[in-house]
Length: 311
Image (cartoon, rainbow, N blue to C red):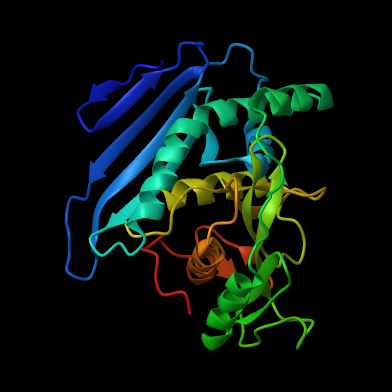
């Protein structure tokens, strides 16, 4: 049994294996306005002990974020950490889902996160960590396609180009101009948003995978720093979609992209809709504050603000 230490605003667990420390904190919001019904921020933090882990540099951490589960990795004074945050609302419509996700993150962030970090060293290490957790990599029950159709219909009703197949819903959100899709104008600049069901994570088993891919004309030179800054900027907001995924480096070109994987042993009704709207809001936040047409992300374009309306 792991013993929890009660702290002033949450709980702390020093893992007996020496792998590191997990902390859950409930942070009250200093000023609650009528138009901002956020009552608290829940933070889940894993601090990894360096012994046995590969040594990560700044670019390596952002490549690691491409496989992150339950928050984004970062380095603090040379120590690898991982942080997730959730805004809690007085008008929370999915309180059960929020509570379950927070508890899952607190329980799974450090053991899965450490295994992901260990797995990057070799194919043999990945297989060893996968076998250690023995999590199911597929679903016994099928996903009801009506859930994806409902997600697509909701997006289309808001004027967003969207479609689905039996396991995936995808959409395009214009980052500049008025054209909603590259299918209409090849020169358009839409972000591609996807939510895939029943995806097998290399370590964490089967679940839902949401991604935000950006329409870069060419790879940015400071891609690792862009990913690091975006993860940090998300944590500065009070009113924001859950910070349980990560911006990181993806593909052979190391392009900055967002990825959120949520482990699920079986299909979860409504998960497609929740994760897709999170992608829409996150892409709109980046578009409104940091995207410059034909240039891409410019982080000093304007000061960061609170997450606003998606469309």
